[in-house]
Length: 354
Image (tube, rainbow, N blue to C red; front, side, top):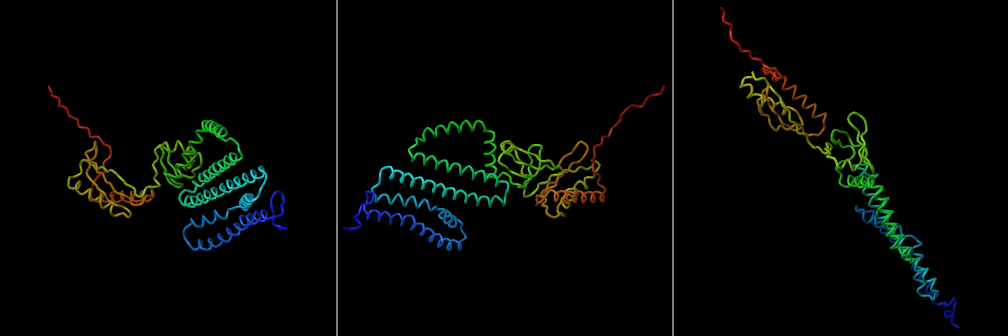
């Protein structure tokens, strides 16, 4: 009698042997193949500069043994005659294993993407890392929620009513926490649009200060007087923000006035004095200097120049040096600065004696 034709549990020994080979090839064989392939590819990717191949190897390495075990059992069952309940159980187990493994793969891709974003964010805006962590957390919830819904659907559960209930509940929750969600989305806008970064000096209305922290709900600014100003992210983005941190040069306009008694020849010399005052300083670029207008008590001149660096202390040092230079030149030439004065003219008649 042929041993392969012996029947065990409604299947011949031949069928059991084929099923065992399929199980071993699917589970153990594929597992060993993945291990060997990832080691070989990892050696090759270590010599390249791109990070995509390294990410692909890392994702493949996250393949779990129980996925191959479940798939091995499922494919092996195809060669056997099994009760319907067993076949259904093995089919459900294989599908759920694939769904869970897919969730792990997608989660790994999201985690790697966020890790690269964190590295770039640490160089420009370290506080934005907090928001990226929140994005990662929300992404994981979405991925695994999808995995659970698909798994329940595979088990025969009607997920339509469940999804509808979650939708209504989600709307209710969104209405209850709409202010928080508004600040959260504003935080995401700050991270991705980057209107400012940690360390930038901002002017928001009458408030000014340096950005210290950008969080999920609030942004904290250290004012010039030392106190910490806290703005909600939605209110902050709804305001007009002047970002001095992005200033690459500073345009300076300053007026100066001399008395009406100044001779015309000296008035013609003043624009040149102003020009030399600016050009004698470093990190400056002269634009113009003109006799601008006849004022109420002064002849007004206006000078425009650029400080080629944004540093405020440098600007003040330059302006101080310009003022001292102008004062020295005016003093040497006898030119008088104007200040608010009034001249009173009295006109009357001489009384006639009798």
